[in-house]
Image (cartoon, rainbow, N blue to C red; front, side, top):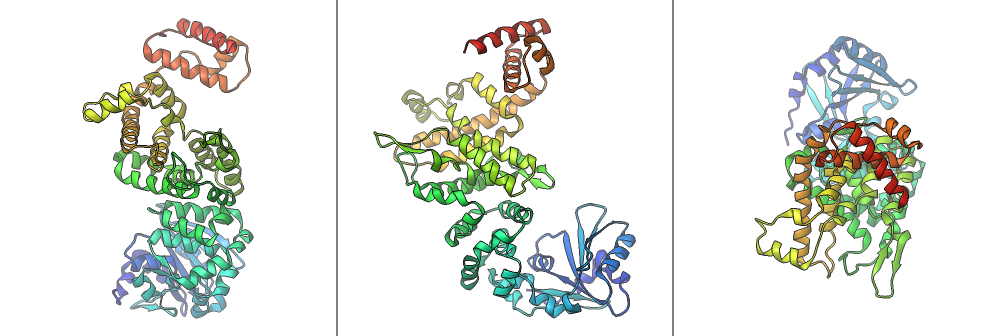
Length: 493
Protein backbone atom coordinates (compact mmCIF):
# COMPACT_ATOMS: atom_id res chain seq x y z
CA UNK A 1 0.00 0.00 0.00
CA UNK A 2 1.30 3.49 -0.87
CA UNK A 3 3.08 5.14 2.08
CA UNK A 4 3.37 8.62 0.60
CA UNK A 5 0.23 10.60 1.33
CA UNK A 6 1.40 14.08 0.35
CA UNK A 7 -0.93 13.99 -2.66
CA UNK A 8 -3.83 14.56 -0.28
CA UNK A 9 -2.60 18.14 0.14
CA UNK A 10 -3.47 18.84 -3.50
CA UNK A 11 -7.17 18.62 -2.66
CA UNK A 12 -8.77 22.11 -2.99
CA UNK A 13 -10.98 21.34 0.01
CA UNK A 14 -8.03 20.40 2.23
CA UNK A 15 -6.17 23.51 1.08
CA UNK A 16 -9.15 25.64 2.07
CA UNK A 17 -9.36 24.00 5.50
CA UNK A 18 -5.66 24.58 6.16
CA UNK A 19 -5.95 28.21 5.04
CA UNK A 20 -8.71 28.76 7.62
CA UNK A 21 -6.72 27.36 10.56
CA UNK A 22 -5.31 29.58 13.26
CA UNK A 23 -1.61 29.32 14.05
CA UNK A 24 -0.82 26.28 16.16
CA UNK A 25 -3.96 24.36 15.16
CA UNK A 26 -3.43 20.73 14.15
CA UNK A 27 -5.75 19.11 11.59
CA UNK A 28 -6.24 15.35 11.13
CA UNK A 29 -8.32 13.54 8.55
CA UNK A 30 -9.75 10.54 10.42
CA UNK A 31 -12.08 7.57 10.33
CA UNK A 32 -13.93 6.11 7.37
CA UNK A 33 -12.64 8.68 4.91
CA UNK A 34 -9.04 7.57 5.45
CA UNK A 35 -10.09 3.92 5.30
CA UNK A 36 -11.89 4.39 1.99
CA UNK A 37 -9.10 6.59 0.63
CA UNK A 38 -6.54 3.84 1.27
CA UNK A 39 -8.88 1.26 -0.28
CA UNK A 40 -9.28 3.53 -3.33
CA UNK A 41 -13.04 3.75 -2.79
CA UNK A 42 -15.18 6.82 -3.44
CA UNK A 43 -15.97 8.76 -0.30
CA UNK A 44 -17.74 12.11 -0.16
CA UNK A 45 -17.72 12.58 3.61
CA UNK A 46 -14.52 13.94 5.18
CA UNK A 47 -14.02 13.88 8.95
CA UNK A 48 -11.56 16.34 10.49
CA UNK A 49 -10.29 16.04 14.05
CA UNK A 50 -9.12 19.38 15.40
CA UNK A 51 -6.46 20.07 18.05
CA UNK A 52 -6.17 23.67 19.15
CA UNK A 53 -8.94 26.05 18.14
CA UNK A 54 -12.68 25.44 18.32
CA UNK A 55 -13.87 22.92 15.74
CA UNK A 56 -17.19 24.78 15.39
CA UNK A 57 -15.46 28.10 14.67
CA UNK A 58 -13.11 26.46 12.17
CA UNK A 59 -16.08 24.85 10.41
CA UNK A 60 -17.83 28.22 10.29
CA UNK A 61 -14.79 29.80 8.59
CA UNK A 62 -14.54 26.91 6.10
CA UNK A 63 -18.24 27.21 5.26
CA UNK A 64 -17.84 30.94 4.58
CA UNK A 65 -14.76 30.36 2.42
CA UNK A 66 -16.43 27.60 0.38
CA UNK A 67 -19.80 29.41 0.33
CA UNK A 68 -21.42 26.32 1.81
CA UNK A 69 -23.94 25.37 4.48
CA UNK A 70 -22.93 25.36 8.16
CA UNK A 71 -24.59 23.24 10.88
CA UNK A 72 -23.72 22.89 14.57
CA UNK A 73 -24.15 19.20 15.45
CA UNK A 74 -23.15 19.28 19.13
CA UNK A 75 -22.19 22.53 20.80
CA UNK A 76 -21.08 20.86 24.03
CA UNK A 77 -18.76 18.38 22.27
CA UNK A 78 -17.66 21.03 19.74
CA UNK A 79 -18.83 19.28 16.56
CA UNK A 80 -20.05 20.95 13.36
CA UNK A 81 -20.77 20.06 9.74
CA UNK A 82 -20.22 21.83 6.45
CA UNK A 83 -22.41 20.70 3.54
CA UNK A 84 -20.91 21.78 0.23
CA UNK A 85 -23.05 23.44 -2.37
CA UNK A 86 -23.22 20.25 -4.44
CA UNK A 87 -25.12 18.75 -1.41
CA UNK A 88 -23.11 15.59 -2.00
CA UNK A 89 -19.89 16.27 -0.10
CA UNK A 90 -19.91 16.90 3.65
CA UNK A 91 -17.11 17.95 5.99
CA UNK A 92 -17.42 17.12 9.69
CA UNK A 93 -15.23 18.94 12.23
CA UNK A 94 -14.85 17.63 15.78
CA UNK A 95 -12.60 18.74 18.62
CA UNK A 96 -10.24 15.94 19.64
CA UNK A 97 -11.03 14.30 22.95
CA UNK A 98 -8.84 15.93 25.62
CA UNK A 99 -7.40 17.98 22.72
CA UNK A 100 -5.19 15.00 21.88
CA UNK A 101 -5.27 12.86 18.71
CA UNK A 102 -3.94 9.74 20.46
CA UNK A 103 -6.78 9.78 22.98
CA UNK A 104 -9.25 10.37 20.14
CA UNK A 105 -8.03 7.32 18.19
CA UNK A 106 -8.01 5.21 21.36
CA UNK A 107 -11.77 5.74 21.65
CA UNK A 108 -12.71 4.59 18.14
CA UNK A 109 -14.55 1.39 17.24
CA UNK A 110 -12.43 -0.70 14.83
CA UNK A 111 -8.77 -0.58 13.92
CA UNK A 112 -9.43 0.28 10.28
CA UNK A 113 -11.32 3.35 11.51
CA UNK A 114 -8.55 4.31 13.93
CA UNK A 115 -6.27 5.72 11.26
CA UNK A 116 -5.50 9.43 11.05
CA UNK A 117 -3.71 11.54 8.48
CA UNK A 118 -2.13 14.67 9.90
CA UNK A 119 -2.15 17.33 7.19
CA UNK A 120 0.01 20.42 7.14
CA UNK A 121 1.30 22.92 4.61
CA UNK A 122 4.00 20.64 3.28
CA UNK A 123 3.40 17.09 4.48
CA UNK A 124 0.76 14.45 5.22
CA UNK A 125 1.68 11.95 7.92
CA UNK A 126 -0.21 8.69 8.65
CA UNK A 127 -0.87 7.82 12.31
CA UNK A 128 -1.71 4.16 12.91
CA UNK A 129 -1.63 3.18 16.61
CA UNK A 130 -3.57 -0.12 16.25
CA UNK A 131 -2.13 -1.57 13.03
CA UNK A 132 -5.24 -0.65 11.09
CA UNK A 133 -3.20 -0.51 7.90
CA UNK A 134 -2.32 -4.20 8.28
CA UNK A 135 -5.99 -5.04 8.92
CA UNK A 136 -6.92 -3.18 5.74
CA UNK A 137 -4.39 -5.28 3.83
CA UNK A 138 -5.77 -8.45 5.45
CA UNK A 139 -9.40 -7.39 4.95
CA UNK A 140 -10.14 -7.83 8.63
CA UNK A 141 -12.52 -6.09 11.04
CA UNK A 142 -10.89 -6.00 14.49
CA UNK A 143 -12.17 -4.16 17.55
CA UNK A 144 -10.00 -1.51 19.22
CA UNK A 145 -11.21 -2.44 22.70
CA UNK A 146 -14.13 -4.11 24.45
CA UNK A 147 -14.88 -0.97 26.46
CA UNK A 148 -15.34 1.03 23.26
CA UNK A 149 -18.11 -1.34 22.13
CA UNK A 150 -19.84 -1.01 25.48
CA UNK A 151 -19.53 2.79 25.45
CA UNK A 152 -21.60 2.93 22.24
CA UNK A 153 -23.33 -0.40 21.46
CA UNK A 154 -24.33 0.83 17.99
CA UNK A 155 -20.75 -0.11 17.13
CA UNK A 156 -21.81 -3.76 17.35
CA UNK A 157 -24.18 -3.30 14.40
CA UNK A 158 -21.66 -1.02 12.68
CA UNK A 159 -19.07 -3.82 12.74
CA UNK A 160 -21.40 -6.10 10.81
CA UNK A 161 -22.34 -3.25 8.46
CA UNK A 162 -18.72 -2.35 7.64
CA UNK A 163 -17.90 -6.03 7.04
CA UNK A 164 -20.78 -6.23 4.54
CA UNK A 165 -19.88 -2.98 2.83
CA UNK A 166 -16.19 -3.84 2.39
CA UNK A 167 -16.60 -7.62 2.07
CA UNK A 168 -14.19 -8.07 5.01
CA UNK A 169 -14.08 -10.86 7.59
CA UNK A 170 -14.51 -10.17 11.31
CA UNK A 171 -11.74 -11.64 13.45
CA UNK A 172 -12.63 -14.35 15.98
CA UNK A 173 -12.08 -12.31 19.15
CA UNK A 174 -14.21 -9.46 17.80
CA UNK A 175 -17.03 -11.87 16.91
CA UNK A 176 -16.94 -13.19 20.48
CA UNK A 177 -17.31 -9.65 21.83
CA UNK A 178 -20.14 -8.82 19.41
CA UNK A 179 -22.00 -11.93 20.57
CA UNK A 180 -21.28 -11.32 24.26
CA UNK A 181 -22.63 -7.76 24.22
CA UNK A 182 -25.37 -8.13 21.59
CA UNK A 183 -28.21 -7.24 23.96
CA UNK A 184 -26.70 -3.81 24.59
CA UNK A 185 -28.10 -2.72 21.21
CA UNK A 186 -31.41 -2.09 23.02
CA UNK A 187 -29.77 0.86 24.77
CA UNK A 188 -29.34 2.59 21.38
CA UNK A 189 -31.94 4.95 19.91
CA UNK A 190 -33.93 3.27 17.15
CA UNK A 191 -33.25 6.21 14.82
CA UNK A 192 -29.54 5.34 14.87
CA UNK A 193 -30.19 1.60 14.41
CA UNK A 194 -32.38 2.36 11.41
CA UNK A 195 -29.59 4.29 9.65
CA UNK A 196 -27.07 1.48 10.15
CA UNK A 197 -29.55 -1.13 8.91
CA UNK A 198 -30.11 0.78 5.68
CA UNK A 199 -26.35 0.93 5.13
CA UNK A 200 -26.02 -2.80 5.86
CA UNK A 201 -28.64 -3.74 3.28
CA UNK A 202 -27.27 -1.21 0.78
CA UNK A 203 -24.12 -3.34 0.51
CA UNK A 204 -23.83 -5.22 -2.76
CA UNK A 205 -23.92 -8.47 -0.79
CA UNK A 206 -25.39 -8.59 2.71
CA UNK A 207 -26.45 -12.20 3.04
CA UNK A 208 -23.26 -13.74 4.45
CA UNK A 209 -23.11 -11.09 7.17
CA UNK A 210 -26.80 -11.64 7.94
CA UNK A 211 -25.98 -15.31 8.48
CA UNK A 212 -23.15 -14.34 10.82
CA UNK A 213 -25.53 -12.05 12.67
CA UNK A 214 -27.84 -15.03 13.07
CA UNK A 215 -25.03 -17.28 14.34
CA UNK A 216 -24.12 -14.75 17.03
CA UNK A 217 -27.79 -14.19 17.90
CA UNK A 218 -27.51 -10.49 17.10
CA UNK A 219 -29.96 -10.71 14.18
CA UNK A 220 -32.72 -11.66 16.57
CA UNK A 221 -32.05 -8.62 18.74
CA UNK A 222 -33.15 -6.49 15.77
CA UNK A 223 -35.69 -8.84 14.17
CA UNK A 224 -36.85 -10.95 17.15
CA UNK A 225 -39.64 -12.85 15.39
CA UNK A 226 -37.24 -14.25 12.79
CA UNK A 227 -36.02 -16.70 15.44
CA UNK A 228 -39.27 -18.66 15.23
CA UNK A 229 -38.45 -19.40 11.58
CA UNK A 230 -35.76 -21.82 12.79
CA UNK A 231 -38.58 -24.16 13.93
CA UNK A 232 -40.05 -24.60 10.44
CA UNK A 233 -38.29 -27.44 8.58
CA UNK A 234 -37.96 -28.16 4.86
CA UNK A 235 -41.07 -29.50 3.14
CA UNK A 236 -42.26 -30.83 -0.19
CA UNK A 237 -41.90 -27.35 -1.71
CA UNK A 238 -39.02 -25.95 0.36
CA UNK A 239 -35.58 -27.56 0.38
CA UNK A 240 -34.40 -25.28 3.20
CA UNK A 241 -35.68 -24.57 6.69
CA UNK A 242 -37.56 -21.29 6.77
CA UNK A 243 -34.83 -18.99 8.16
CA UNK A 244 -32.34 -20.28 5.57
CA UNK A 245 -35.00 -19.82 2.89
CA UNK A 246 -35.34 -16.18 3.94
CA UNK A 247 -31.57 -15.70 3.63
CA UNK A 248 -31.63 -17.40 0.23
CA UNK A 249 -34.32 -15.01 -1.04
CA UNK A 250 -32.06 -12.08 -0.09
CA UNK A 251 -29.16 -13.73 -1.94
CA UNK A 252 -31.31 -14.31 -5.01
CA UNK A 253 -32.37 -10.64 -5.05
CA UNK A 254 -28.68 -9.67 -4.97
CA UNK A 255 -28.00 -12.04 -7.87
CA UNK A 256 -31.00 -10.93 -9.91
CA UNK A 257 -29.93 -7.30 -9.72
CA UNK A 258 -26.83 -8.33 -11.67
CA UNK A 259 -28.60 -10.54 -14.22
CA UNK A 260 -31.91 -8.81 -15.00
CA UNK A 261 -32.23 -5.99 -17.57
CA UNK A 262 -30.32 -2.85 -16.65
CA UNK A 263 -33.47 -0.74 -16.35
CA UNK A 264 -34.57 -2.87 -13.38
CA UNK A 265 -31.32 -2.25 -11.48
CA UNK A 266 -31.48 1.45 -12.34
CA UNK A 267 -34.96 1.65 -10.86
CA UNK A 268 -33.74 0.20 -7.57
CA UNK A 269 -31.06 2.92 -7.38
CA UNK A 270 -33.74 5.61 -7.30
CA UNK A 271 -34.58 7.27 -4.00
CA UNK A 272 -37.53 5.95 -2.04
CA UNK A 273 -37.31 8.75 0.53
CA UNK A 274 -34.77 11.02 2.26
CA UNK A 275 -31.69 9.67 0.50
CA UNK A 276 -32.74 6.01 0.95
CA UNK A 277 -32.72 3.90 -2.21
CA UNK A 278 -35.16 1.15 -3.07
CA UNK A 279 -32.40 -1.52 -3.21
CA UNK A 280 -31.85 -1.89 0.56
CA UNK A 281 -35.59 -1.71 1.20
CA UNK A 282 -36.23 -4.51 -1.29
CA UNK A 283 -33.63 -6.68 0.47
CA UNK A 284 -35.25 -6.00 3.84
CA UNK A 285 -38.58 -7.04 2.31
CA UNK A 286 -36.88 -10.19 1.00
CA UNK A 287 -35.60 -11.06 4.48
CA UNK A 288 -39.04 -10.46 6.03
CA UNK A 289 -41.24 -11.77 3.21
CA UNK A 290 -42.29 -14.83 5.26
CA UNK A 291 -42.37 -12.98 8.59
CA UNK A 292 -45.92 -14.21 9.20
CA UNK A 293 -45.35 -17.91 8.56
CA UNK A 294 -44.56 -19.10 12.12
CA UNK A 295 -47.87 -17.71 13.39
CA UNK A 296 -49.90 -19.25 10.53
CA UNK A 297 -48.11 -22.62 10.36
CA UNK A 298 -50.37 -25.67 10.17
CA UNK A 299 -49.58 -29.26 9.18
CA UNK A 300 -52.60 -30.92 7.58
CA UNK A 301 -53.59 -34.59 7.69
CA UNK A 302 -51.85 -35.27 4.38
CA UNK A 303 -48.59 -33.91 5.83
CA UNK A 304 -48.61 -30.71 3.81
CA UNK A 305 -47.46 -27.50 5.50
CA UNK A 306 -49.93 -24.64 5.17
CA UNK A 307 -49.48 -20.96 6.02
CA UNK A 308 -52.88 -19.45 5.37
CA UNK A 309 -52.75 -15.66 4.89
CA UNK A 310 -49.14 -15.50 6.10
CA UNK A 311 -48.51 -12.64 3.68
CA UNK A 312 -51.15 -10.50 5.42
CA UNK A 313 -49.94 -11.36 8.92
CA UNK A 314 -46.29 -10.85 7.95
CA UNK A 315 -46.90 -7.50 6.28
CA UNK A 316 -48.63 -6.14 9.39
CA UNK A 317 -45.95 -7.46 11.74
CA UNK A 318 -43.19 -6.01 9.58
CA UNK A 319 -45.03 -2.69 9.41
CA UNK A 320 -45.20 -2.48 13.21
CA UNK A 321 -41.53 -3.42 13.60
CA UNK A 322 -40.27 -0.95 11.01
CA UNK A 323 -42.34 1.87 12.49
CA UNK A 324 -40.72 1.14 15.86
CA UNK A 325 -37.31 1.27 14.15
CA UNK A 326 -38.22 4.75 12.83
CA UNK A 327 -38.22 3.86 9.13
CA UNK A 328 -39.79 6.59 7.03
CA UNK A 329 -43.46 6.41 6.10
CA UNK A 330 -42.66 5.74 2.44
CA UNK A 331 -40.13 3.03 3.31
CA UNK A 332 -42.63 1.24 5.57
CA UNK A 333 -45.35 1.49 2.93
CA UNK A 334 -43.04 0.06 0.25
CA UNK A 335 -41.86 -2.91 2.35
CA UNK A 336 -45.45 -3.59 3.48
CA UNK A 337 -46.57 -3.73 -0.16
CA UNK A 338 -43.74 -6.09 -1.15
CA UNK A 339 -44.52 -8.53 1.69
CA UNK A 340 -48.30 -8.29 1.39
CA UNK A 341 -48.27 -9.10 -2.34
CA UNK A 342 -45.16 -11.29 -2.72
CA UNK A 343 -47.28 -14.31 -3.74
CA UNK A 344 -49.30 -12.35 -6.29
CA UNK A 345 -47.15 -12.73 -9.45
CA UNK A 346 -46.60 -16.48 -9.01
CA UNK A 347 -50.30 -17.01 -8.35
CA UNK A 348 -51.08 -15.72 -11.85
CA UNK A 349 -48.95 -18.34 -13.60
CA UNK A 350 -50.89 -21.14 -15.28
CA UNK A 351 -49.09 -24.45 -14.93
CA UNK A 352 -50.22 -27.80 -16.35
CA UNK A 353 -48.51 -30.73 -18.04
CA UNK A 354 -49.54 -29.57 -21.50
CA UNK A 355 -47.95 -26.12 -21.08
CA UNK A 356 -44.80 -27.56 -19.50
CA UNK A 357 -44.36 -30.04 -22.38
CA UNK A 358 -44.83 -27.28 -24.96
CA UNK A 359 -42.32 -25.10 -23.11
CA UNK A 360 -39.81 -27.96 -22.85
CA UNK A 361 -40.18 -28.82 -26.54
CA UNK A 362 -39.56 -25.31 -27.87
CA UNK A 363 -38.60 -22.76 -25.23
CA UNK A 364 -37.42 -20.17 -27.76
CA UNK A 365 -40.78 -19.93 -29.55
CA UNK A 366 -43.06 -20.58 -26.59
CA UNK A 367 -46.05 -18.21 -26.47
CA UNK A 368 -46.22 -16.92 -22.89
CA UNK A 369 -49.69 -15.44 -23.44
CA UNK A 370 -50.91 -18.99 -22.76
CA UNK A 371 -49.29 -18.90 -19.30
CA UNK A 372 -51.37 -16.11 -17.81
CA UNK A 373 -54.65 -14.30 -18.15
CA UNK A 374 -53.67 -11.04 -19.83
CA UNK A 375 -56.53 -9.34 -18.06
CA UNK A 376 -55.26 -10.54 -14.67
CA UNK A 377 -51.71 -9.51 -15.54
CA UNK A 378 -52.90 -6.04 -16.53
CA UNK A 379 -54.67 -5.78 -13.21
CA UNK A 380 -51.41 -6.64 -11.41
CA UNK A 381 -49.58 -3.90 -13.30
CA UNK A 382 -52.18 -1.29 -12.43
CA UNK A 383 -52.63 -2.35 -8.82
CA UNK A 384 -48.93 -2.50 -7.97
CA UNK A 385 -48.12 0.27 -10.47
CA UNK A 386 -44.50 1.55 -10.39
CA UNK A 387 -43.47 -1.09 -7.84
CA UNK A 388 -44.35 -3.98 -10.17
CA UNK A 389 -40.74 -4.75 -11.23
CA UNK A 390 -39.69 -4.84 -7.56
CA UNK A 391 -42.52 -7.22 -6.69
CA UNK A 392 -41.70 -9.49 -9.63
CA UNK A 393 -38.10 -9.61 -8.39
CA UNK A 394 -39.26 -10.72 -4.94
CA UNK A 395 -41.51 -13.34 -6.56
CA UNK A 396 -38.68 -14.55 -8.77
CA UNK A 397 -36.23 -14.71 -5.86
CA UNK A 398 -38.82 -16.60 -3.80
CA UNK A 399 -39.37 -19.09 -6.61
CA UNK A 400 -35.62 -19.64 -7.10
CA UNK A 401 -35.30 -20.28 -3.36
CA UNK A 402 -38.05 -22.91 -3.31
CA UNK A 403 -36.65 -26.16 -4.69
CA UNK A 404 -38.28 -28.95 -2.71
CA UNK A 405 -38.90 -32.39 -4.22
CA UNK A 406 -42.23 -31.35 -5.76
CA UNK A 407 -40.57 -28.54 -7.77
CA UNK A 408 -38.92 -30.11 -10.82
CA UNK A 409 -36.09 -28.30 -12.67
CA UNK A 410 -38.46 -27.89 -15.63
CA UNK A 411 -41.14 -26.29 -13.45
CA UNK A 412 -38.56 -23.98 -11.92
CA UNK A 413 -37.24 -22.87 -15.30
CA UNK A 414 -40.73 -22.38 -16.69
CA UNK A 415 -41.92 -20.24 -13.76
CA UNK A 416 -38.81 -18.03 -13.87
CA UNK A 417 -39.12 -17.51 -17.63
CA UNK A 418 -42.77 -16.57 -17.24
CA UNK A 419 -41.85 -14.00 -14.57
CA UNK A 420 -39.14 -12.59 -16.84
CA UNK A 421 -41.80 -12.26 -19.52
CA UNK A 422 -43.98 -10.41 -16.99
CA UNK A 423 -41.17 -7.87 -16.58
CA UNK A 424 -40.85 -7.30 -20.32
CA UNK A 425 -44.60 -7.04 -20.70
CA UNK A 426 -44.74 -4.48 -17.88
CA UNK A 427 -42.23 -2.25 -19.63
CA UNK A 428 -44.33 -2.30 -22.80
CA UNK A 429 -47.67 -1.99 -21.03
CA UNK A 430 -47.24 0.81 -18.50
CA UNK A 431 -46.72 3.70 -20.96
CA UNK A 432 -50.08 2.77 -22.53
CA UNK A 433 -51.78 2.84 -19.11
CA UNK A 434 -50.31 6.23 -18.31
CA UNK A 435 -51.70 7.60 -21.60
CA UNK A 436 -55.27 6.57 -20.74
CA UNK A 437 -57.35 9.68 -20.00
CA UNK A 438 -59.38 9.53 -16.77
CA UNK A 439 -63.01 9.75 -17.88
CA UNK A 440 -64.40 9.95 -14.35
CA UNK A 441 -62.52 10.63 -11.12
CA UNK A 442 -62.91 9.27 -7.60
CA UNK A 443 -65.06 12.12 -6.33
CA UNK A 444 -67.46 11.70 -9.25
CA UNK A 445 -67.67 7.95 -8.58
CA UNK A 446 -68.53 8.55 -4.90
CA UNK A 447 -71.21 11.08 -5.84
CA UNK A 448 -72.61 8.86 -8.59
CA UNK A 449 -72.89 5.82 -6.32
CA UNK A 450 -73.55 7.75 -3.08
CA UNK A 451 -70.75 5.96 -1.23
CA UNK A 452 -67.96 6.96 1.15
CA UNK A 453 -64.22 6.93 0.37
CA UNK A 454 -62.65 3.48 0.51
CA UNK A 455 -60.74 0.77 -1.33
CA UNK A 456 -63.74 0.07 -3.53
CA UNK A 457 -63.13 3.37 -5.36
CA UNK A 458 -59.67 2.20 -6.40
CA UNK A 459 -61.03 -1.18 -7.50
CA UNK A 460 -63.65 0.49 -9.66
CA UNK A 461 -61.07 2.80 -11.24
CA UNK A 462 -58.80 -0.17 -12.03
CA UNK A 463 -61.63 -2.01 -13.78
CA UNK A 464 -62.69 1.14 -15.62
CA UNK A 465 -59.19 1.70 -16.96
CA UNK A 466 -59.06 -1.91 -18.14
CA UNK A 467 -62.30 -1.41 -20.05
CA UNK A 468 -60.85 1.72 -21.65
CA UNK A 469 -57.72 -0.17 -22.71
CA UNK A 470 -59.86 -2.91 -24.27
CA UNK A 471 -61.87 -0.32 -26.19
CA UNK A 472 -65.17 -1.26 -24.51
CA UNK A 473 -65.46 2.15 -22.78
CA UNK A 474 -64.68 5.27 -24.83
CA UNK A 475 -66.77 8.17 -23.52
CA UNK A 476 -67.80 9.62 -20.18
CA UNK A 477 -71.31 8.29 -20.72
CA UNK A 478 -69.85 4.81 -21.28
CA UNK A 479 -67.81 5.21 -18.07
CA UNK A 480 -70.87 6.20 -16.01
CA UNK A 481 -72.84 3.19 -17.25
CA UNK A 482 -69.93 0.82 -16.59
CA UNK A 483 -69.38 2.16 -13.06
CA UNK A 484 -73.05 1.67 -12.19
CA UNK A 485 -73.22 -1.88 -13.57
CA UNK A 486 -69.88 -2.91 -12.04
CA UNK A 487 -70.92 -1.59 -8.62
CA UNK A 488 -74.16 -3.60 -8.79
CA UNK A 489 -72.12 -6.75 -9.49
CA UNK A 490 -69.87 -6.00 -6.50
CA UNK A 491 -72.90 -5.59 -4.22
CA UNK A 492 -74.31 -8.91 -5.40
CA UNK A 493 -71.05 -10.61 -4.48
